Image (cartoon, rainbow, N blue to C red; front, top):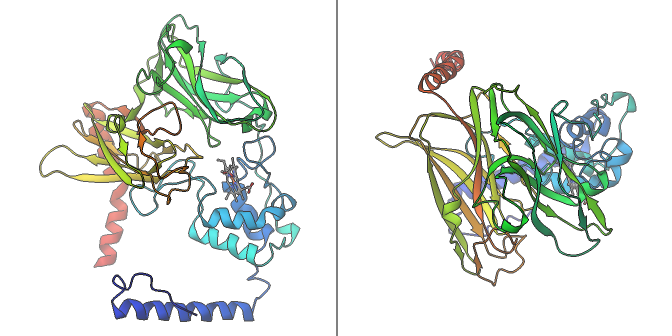
Length: 459
Ligand code: HEC
C-alpha cells in the first residue's frame, strides 16, 4: 500500500502521518479478514439489505411512468444497473440531495438521502456481484399510488397551460406560458400541484415553476420576469417533487383575476413531444383567511444583479433581507444556472453582541432544483429584525463539471443558461409576538428532558 501525501506542507505532522499508516494497516487487515471468512450472514443481498434502501430512497422516481430513465422496483430491474448505482450513490449524486452534511440543520421533510452505512451496504452488494439473496426475505413493495393521481386530494380548480410543441432535437428551451385562473374573488390556497399530463412529456420537462401574476401579464412582457416582476411563487415541478401542501392553518393568497404563469425549462428527447402542463388548486372555503400567510420569495438576488465572474475564477456575493416580524422559516432552496457552486443561509440575529447562525448550506447540481423543507421541530423561529443573509458562490473554473467554457467571462442574466443568476427561495410565515413567544417556549419544553439526561450523564 502506497500513501500519497499530496501537500507535504499541510501534512507535516508526524502524528498525522502515523495515524494514516495505522489506519491503512487496520483497513488492510479488515479487508483481509472479510475476504477470508465471508459467512452466509455477512453477505449483503438485494432481498435483505438493498431493496429496503431502494424502496425508501429511489423508487419514487425510479418506477414506470415516473421521471427517472429506469425502474428499480425489482431485482431484475435493478441488477443490470448495479455498477451505475454504486457509482451514483457513492458520489452522492443519487438520490438528488445536496445539503452540506457538515453544517447547520440536518432534518428536512422527505429527505431521501442515504446514510454512510447505507452507501457502504450498496457498495458491498455491488462488489460482491450484486447477489439476489433469498426471495422469501424480500420486504413487501410499498403501495405504489397511480403516478397520475393528484397528491393534494381533489382540486377545486384545474388550469391547463397552452400545449407546447417541443422539437425532437435542439437546445434546451426556456420561457413562460400563461393561463387565467379566472377567480372572481380573493381566495387562499391550501394545497397546489403541478402535473405533466402525458407521461411521455415527463422526460421533456426539466422544471416548471408556477406563479400567480397580474391579469395583464402575458408572453409579450416575458423575458426575465421570473425574478423582476416576480408575482407570487406558487409551486415548482422538478426533481420528482410537484405538490405543495401548506402547513396547517397556513396558505397563499390568490388574488381575484390573477393569471397563472409557468416558467419552463424543457429538453428534447429525440421525438417531437406535445408538452401539456396543468396546475390543480385546493382552496380554503370562500371567505376563510388562514391564520398564517405563507411567503415564498427569491432572496439575495440583488447581490447577483450585476455579477461579474472573470474567467477561471470563483466569486462570492452576499444578499441581506430584514424580517420585520417574527417568523418561522419553512424552506431553503438555492437557485443558480450552470456556474452555481454552493449557497448558505445565515441568520444574523438583532441585538448586541451580534449572534449569527448558519442554518443551511447546499451544493449546487444544475440538473436538480431541490427544495429543502425544514422538519417542523427544527424549522428556525426568529425574532423581528433578523437578517436573512444569503451567501452565494459561483465556480467558473474547469473544476465545475457543468461549466462549458471556463475561459469566458460570465455576467448576470436570468433568461439564458449561459448567463448567471443566484438567489435563494426562502419559504416562511410571519408570527405575532405572542405566537413567537409560544413557539420558543414549546421548543424549550421539547428540549428540556434531553438536556437533563445529558447533565446527569456528565456528572
Ligand atoms: C427525485 C427523483 C429521483 C430519485 C429519488 C432517485 N433518482 Fe436516480 N435518477 C433520476 C433521474 C431523473 C435520472 C436521470 C438523470 C440523471 O442521470 O441525473 C436518474 C439517474 C440515475 C442513474 C443513472 C442512470 C443512467 O442512465 O446511467 C442511476 C444509477 C440512479 N439514478 C440510481 C438511483 C438510486 C440508486 C437512487 C436511490 C438511492 C435514485 N437514483 C434516486 C431521478 C431520481
